[in-house]
Amino acid sequence: MDPKAARRLLLAADPLTDGDVLATRLLRIDEAERIREVLQDADITCQLRLMKPGRVAGSGRDPYLDNAYSTLRPSWNVIVSPADVARARALVEEELHTDVDGRDDTAEIASGEGPRPTPIALVVLPWDEAWDLVEELGRRGIQAAVGAPLGDGSLDEREAPVLVLPEDVERAAMLVPPEGA
Image (spheres, rainbow, N blue to C red):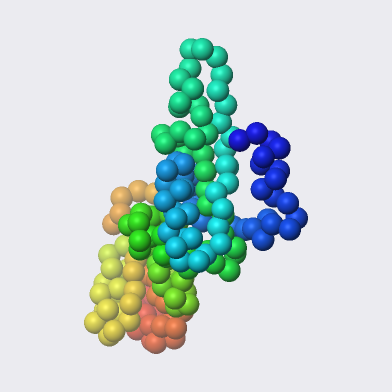
């Protein structure tokens, strides 16, 4: 696409001037066109945009591979309004069975359920004790996990955080053994 044609796509009156990219990776032209078709069928305003301009250089290169319209070279993305991003991603992933945003909770976000809260560290314990506490919390109906081990050395010599959801901190804290016990 020449620069003049690219500028034509970004006129001030264009409803997608401030649009967001649908995919978190560059798409091949055939992928982008399939995504555009799915979105148009669902009446979601979108447009293809060349994100990485191609260049054809010299006779020793394959012009097909360097061309922006190559089905092998990812160069494109699909632009939608910011309000439509979550719904568009969920629709594309459902219809085309392809991951466009690298998330496993896209459908939940699109339905308004939103992402799960980020777990927080309840306590840092030696590796084996952290796993024991996670097991005990699980028996009491509290979701917990052992975070990444801290420091260096063998695992049994390292400490790790015990992670719980924010709404479970108070209840879980009652099960944490006092320091030095």
